[in-house]
Image (tube, rainbow, N blue to C red; front, top):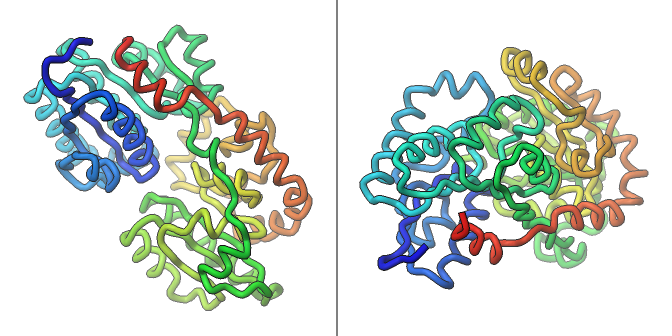
Length: 373
């Protein structure tokens, strides 16, 4: 593509992990092109020049029911983005995660035939709602997959994709003593990480269960301290509110997930990217997920895979415990924690296997690829 003007890129993401991925790709593109950015992003994309039309957390909604409840507002936000992308005559639209929100933008812009559409982070089309592959092929020119099994799925369905790889392929554990000193933690204590998720609905569903588990575990394990990392002030306030009657030794802190996982015996994690981060940092995760009854009733009937935890999907077997819906209770989490020592012994080997599976073409090659579509 020959450009006589700065590249105009529309970009949309709805959570911090997508913000990091988008920032890495844009940083790579800025090495060779002048770029004007439009859309919505988090702090990293905003630092690179995105003037967000609204707070990116507004589209951070998951499941089947919550998007329906918020349909009118989400539609208004989507239309405001489509309007500015059309007015600016963007060259590329980059949607990051948030597949149900972004597919509407991909569809609208594809009818204009002006720009190319790129999706970073594949929808879980390989796992459920596989009929979405028709829309993906029709409206998206290139999907950048974090995982190789996603790339292979698209190859089987003749959709252009690349295995971008995952940033966790370069993730390394922080030295325990350094972390203990920097956080002023005691070396005589043992630590457990509790990762409630990043979305409000996730935290509201999951954290009360984790609170009950922490209370139960602490009765017999007085030497343990719970570490609860959160992404931002909003999450901090919500977790603190839900922790009012916790009454156990716990530390809630922003931007400390890597440090906390590096020193923890194990973690209790809401299903998502953090399960993978935990496994790679040598902290065996107990993978948990619970949603409202109607969401689960619909989703469970559409699932095409036996496991939902990312490390288990990559390993091809249920290596780490998965506690879903009615199985996700304080008792089941407690029982799973009693069987975790054997996983800790092999954690370094498992981490290396996972990191090898996460290596893809990288952002430098991905930035070149978008000009070939």
